[in-house]
Structures are given as C-alpha cells and as structure tokens.
Length: 612
Image 1 (cartoon, rainbow, N blue to C red):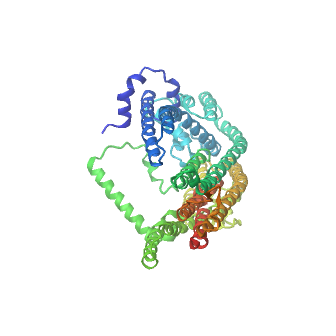
Image 2: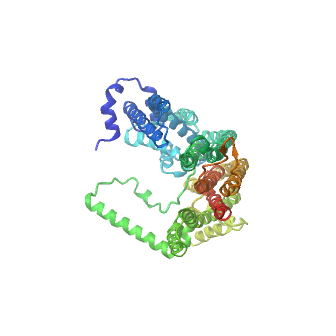
Image 3: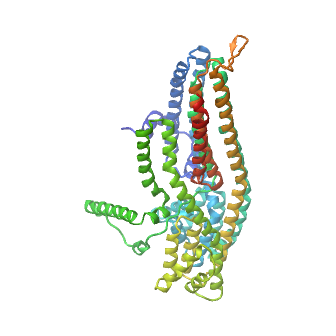
C-alpha cells in the first residue's frame, strides 16, 4: 500500500523539488517535524485537492438532502470548492509555523520551573552534557525535554562537540528566551566562567517573566471564555429557538435542528477545548521512579539478543502484567488512589449490569440509558479524582513549610538526614505523616535519597512535589550543603502557588458565568418546550395571523427531543470547559458536567415530557 507521502511526492514532486523552501524547512525544524520541505509541500497539495473534491461532492449532496437543489445554490459551491482547497493548502503550509510558536510558548513556560533544577545540578558539579542528559529523561521538563534530546542526539550520535551542539540548538530552537539563554551559556562554558552564578541570575529573571506573562495568559483565557459563552452557548440557543419556532413558516426542515444540536455544539466545544489547550500550561503527570538500578548499567554496551531475547521480553512483559493485576486485586484501594482511572474497571461493568436490569424491568429509552450509563460510570471516577486532587493540593500547600524545615536544619550545619528528622517533628498538617514515614525509613537504615524517593512514590501525581524532591536528591549527591538550592526551591514553589491562585481567582468568575449561562439555556428550553409548544399542541396558541397559523407545522415531540439532547450536550461540554480553564485539566470539570447533565435530563423527563 502506497503511503500518503509517497503518493503526494509521485504526483507533485517535480513541482516542489526545485523550489526555494528555506523558510518552511526552518519552521519544520523548529516545530520538531522530521520531514523535508518539498515532501511537506507535496502532501499539502494533495490535501488541498482532496478538500476541493470533498466540498464539490458533499455540497450538492447536502443541497439534495435539504431539497435546495437550485442553480442559485450550486454556483457558490462550485466557486467555493477550489477556494477552500487552496485555503486548506495554505493552512497546511502554515501549520509548522503555528506548531513552532506553540512549542516556543511551552518552552518559555517550562524554563522557570526547570532552571532551578539546572542550577542544582551545576552546583553538584555536573557539566553541560550531564545536565542535558538528565533533562532529556525528566518528564517534568515539559517541552524542554525534547530540546534536550536534540542536543544529546547531536553529541552522542552525530559526534558534535558539546559547545557546537549548544550553538546549533540555539540556532534551531523556536523559543527566543531559550535561544538567548544558550547563546550566553556557550561562551561562559567555553571560557570557564561561573556557570552556577549564571543559572542563578537567569532563574530570577525567568521568575519575573513568568509573573509578567501571567497577566497576558489570563487575558487570553478570558477572551476565549467570552467567545465560548457567545459562540457555543448563546448562539446555538438562539438558532435552535429561531429554527424550531419559525422554521416551518420559512420552509426549513428539522435537519437544521440536528446540525445545531448534534454537530455545532459538540464540534464547536471540542474545537474550543483544543484551542484552550494550546495556550494552557502543559499538564505534566509525573510518575515516581520505581528503580534506579538501570543507572548502574548505563555505560555498558548492549548487543542484539535475537529471537531468544525477544521471547524472554514477551515472557517478562506478561509476568509483569500478571503481577500488576494481582497487586490490583490485593490492594485495589491503594491502586485506585494512585491511579483513579482504575476505578473504571469496577464502575463500567456495574453500570452495564444496572442498565441491563433497568432494561428488563422498566424498558428501553436511549436517552435515559446514555445519560444514566455515563453518570454511573463516570461519577466514581470523578469522586476519586477530586479526593485525590484535594489531597495533593493540601500537600502542595504545605510543601513550602516542609522545605523551610529542611532548610533550617541544613543552614544550622546538619546533614540532610538529620534535617529530615528535624522536619518530622514539625506540625505540617496532612504532610506530617509522610514526613515521619521518611524519618522512619532513615532510622531503619535507608539513605536520605532513598527515603525521599519513597516519599515521592507515595505522593506521586504532584509535579511540584516530584520536582522539588528530585532536585533535593540531585543536589545532595555531591554536596550536603544544599541551603542555596533550598532557597531557590522555596522561591520557586511560592511563585508557582501564587500564580496558580491568581489564575484560579481570575477564571473563577468566568466559570460562574458559564454555569449561569447554562441556567439561562435551561430556562429558555423550559419556557419554549414546557409552555409555548405544549400549549400549541392543545390548540390554545393556534390563532391565525394573516391567514398563517402561528407556530403551525411544528413537530412538537421531535423539537422537544432535540432540545433535550442539546441541553444535555451543553451541560456536558460546559462542565468540561469550566474545569479546563480553571485548572488546566478538564477532568476537574467532570463533576460539573455530570451534575448539569442530570439536571438537563431531569427537567425534560419530569417537567416537560409528561405534558407531551
């Protein structure tokens, strides 16, 4: 089977091979897209032609279905098809530039939280290559992890010297801040300057930049929230009311209601969530490192074991899978606390069983089945997720006090182990138990690093705590005096928590507006379907106006059913959007979505449908 790229290059390769595409190739490299510019342009041409053909075929077909097969409507579609194809081609060519800008934005967000770790490693004696090697394996480095991988590729596989690779990375990175950072770092490293002091000064600078960027970021989120309220909540409401009440008079069919409810609301909401995700800080899920034994074998060369090794790997993989399943059965509560998604293994089968019993005794209703099934399956997950996030939030609020307790011991001349013992005597609220368990590990013979690793494993899921723990471990490997590193960590944690509270406070107002807008949506649905349309059924609103019966020809059961589905979909997506804008994770809005879905269905099932 010929791939899309090969087919496009066969068709358009001659046209693109000799063109000057230096700017496009630069954007492709900055976007991290491993493809040549001429091949990319060929694929864009193919996609443009396919879009033109699709519109040229789908347009007349849509007119035929809507009974609008007239020359007046056919001519615009014929003209629109090539224009849309060319637009799709230009949009495809612009995508690398957009992707590069998005990567630059994520790199700029990651720099302030990673620079503290870089400073800690430099203080422990690590050189530039070791720092970038560590960054290339850290998930909490965000988009910087990919830039570090590019650097390590140049050094370890392409044979470039570290300074040349550093300058190459400065030239190809899409981030202006990272470019400036590397351009200054290269001559400092070349002349043997004070690299830790440079990292310390850049950390302070990036923290100030993060505070300045916060205002711009909140302004963008506020604009997007206003667009969502207007375009995805208010506009579909008005269109549904107009097409439902006046559509029969103007000759419009119920297909418009279907398009608004089942296409416009879901696709518009998903598109909005994708747009918001492009500007939100990257939500990094950090998994605790289960073993450090691999580091001992890093320098040992490996050889291909052939089929025998592949067979052993399959056996080992199956054994690990069985062991994880056994652990899940033995301690399901602990596993679910660590990974809330595992609760779906219980909620989904129980939901299927409950729906089967409902079907046997009460009959079948597709809307009730979908709403009830989704709520029953997702509600336990939403509850566990909220409890887990509340626990993590309390831990993160107390992290600053924990770091202060350790720093007071370090600055008093104590070792890290002794400082952890001092911290275990402090009142740290919910975090006290975990700190005392670290002290118990040390008393049983574990090192401070091992105790911190177990602590990170127990509170896995918090990016902030994981980054702080790993930074302390890395800094303490070469020097017990990590007071300066702890000062940087404390300022980093304080700044991050302050920025999070500021964003949640600013977006909380818009979340309330989204919820109020959903209430207005529901009130409008109730007034139309529960009063006007039901009265129209009884004939009390059937007066003739100019020979035309008011609201005549409306299929009231169909309109009511479509309105009910539109309300349920609005509730679902409005809740997810509220969670996404406030906490950068739509899962935190799942509780709102479930509540609003239940309210929407209950209103129609209890107050409106019995009248019809």
